Image 1 (cartoon, helix red, strand yellow):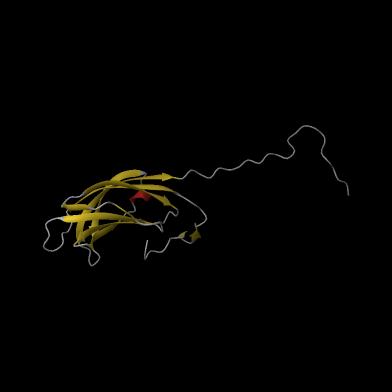
Image 2 (image 1 turned 180 degrees about the vertical axis):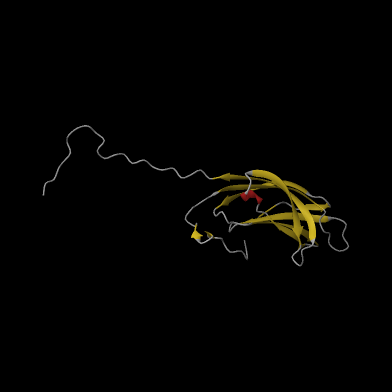
Length: 165
């Protein structure tokens, strides 16, 4: 989560005390139409999912393909409703990691579950550099349990002490 600041508020309201809002599950399914490195006819691709301030999670590398499949699932604790998710694709070329493109993912805020093709954009321009297919699910955390306090005077006997001043 380098270079990202942790979101601590929604508007002006501090929500850092709220704890976990829910759990986001993202399955990275596959990619298509990925931009290839110069003089290459295949790609050795992996996907990194960055969410909130937590650690990034990455798929395995799929070597020498044009349409890689991963079917790998990742789970993230959603601590703030404003947490951001970015899905990035990388290519390994001669033992170096080449950035292919990235896409923000915010749709989980509107839907509990679904599937979506995300358009990847390069860092230098708005050129589309491929697409990545994901499945996602968002499950809200249950509300905190309230603890009932036992009434101190719930018995029926008359042994209460009364102090007169």
